[in-house]
Length: 160
Image (cartoon, rainbow, N blue to C red):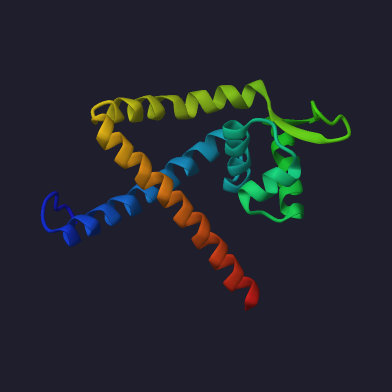
C-alpha cells in the first residue's frame, strides 16, 4: 500500500504496512551484520544487548534475549570464541561473572551501525518536537505491545 493520505483507517493500514516493512528490513540488515561479525543471529542478539546495556551477567542476557540459560551459555561461549566478548569478574560482586564486549566488537558495531544511525538522526531532525514526541510515544507503546505479545506467545507455546 502506498497511500499517503486518506481516511484514518487507510492511514492506520498504511502505517501498519510501513512498520511491517521496517521490521523486515531491520531483520535483513541484521542478517548482513551477523555475517560481518561471523556469528549467527542469536549471537548477534547477545552482542546487541551488550552494546545497548553494557556488561551483563548470563542471567541478564538470558532474560533480555528470551533464551534459556543453557542456550545463553552456549551463545556466550560462541561470542567469546569469536573474539567479540569476554567474561570478567563483576565490579560490585567479585564472585559474579559478567560478559563484556571486546574492543574489536565495539569497533565492528561502530562500523556496521553508525552510518544508518546517523542517517536516522538526520531524518528525525526534520520533524517538529511535537511530531518527535508522537513518534517516541508510538515506539514506546509499540515496544510494550510487542513485549506483552511475545510473553503471550511463549505462554501459549508452553501450554501446548
